[in-house]
Length: 246
Ligand code: PEP
Picture 1 (cartoon, rainbow, N blue to C red):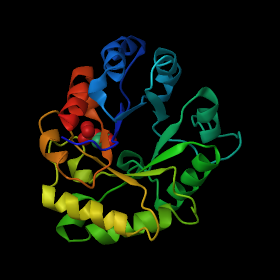
Picture 2 (tube, protein in one colour):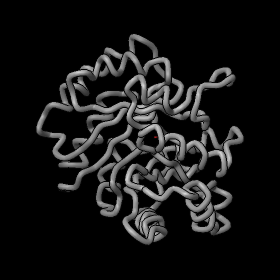
Picture 3 (cartoon, rainbow, N blue to C red):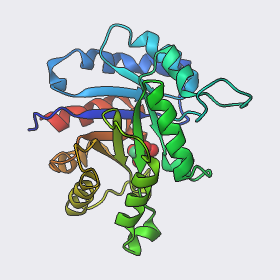
């Protein structure tokens, strides 16, 4: 059983409609129970549901984040985008930046760095996603890829207290495959070693579910989990948290 303060971040991706909000009742009830121990729950729904989620979570401790933001620090002619100030203004406290599904759509490390800096200025906490592809892993390039993502992504970011790094190997996202425990322990240690002073919290993401959490929770340098598919099902999400603390 762990007594560590852990973060459980639900990434709903491009799923959900207004009626999905009702599925949150169980999670709200759970968030008020002792079972959650020292955990923190954060939901990142699509932009269209942020307002409804905020209303729903008004009287509980569950926090809200967005899944991305534009890098501009002011309003502008950017059709279809939302910047970090707009997110903070409606009540979001977190934003996911650098998710591989966005990196895949031409978001490079430099753009991610601009987004991170604008989000921090807007006083959002940043869930900064990094991770290697399967081909990179096979070529034993994991550490060099992560180093570059961290170096460029956090360039000129002096205060890292509002940064959370989510290590998400791309080959583990939505595939049902998770890294071997010893590899994950080593990679999280490597990520933390990149920071001279205090390392940001490092979370793991990629196919976390109520079955594999029993092993994942034993990896003692992980500070929490970024959960995609399983987080859309309240029971599974609650189970993951419960099993982390049982
Ligand atoms: C994610 O997309 O951030 C993620 C971790 O997805 P999944 O849990 O579905 O692998």
